[in-house]
Image: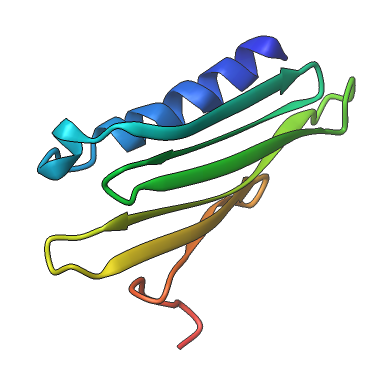
Length: 108
């Protein structure tokens, strides 16, 4: 289970690091928190260039064959156009489900 939490955390970190490096190369960390427990984790951080990320993962069906991690989170950043974009997401047995005002909505 700890391995699964580490894999999810590493995957999310790789997404963050893949973001464009314009002003963020000089950004300073304003806040950084993390808490890893046997049945889940949570972390959050904020930088001087306006980036923010909050995430919480919870172990579901512990000990069962279908044991998994359900993740909820949100991240935001200021784009080159000066607009702040925010993505709220859930990642669980139904896959990765992002939502944001700037993202297409399949139900429309």
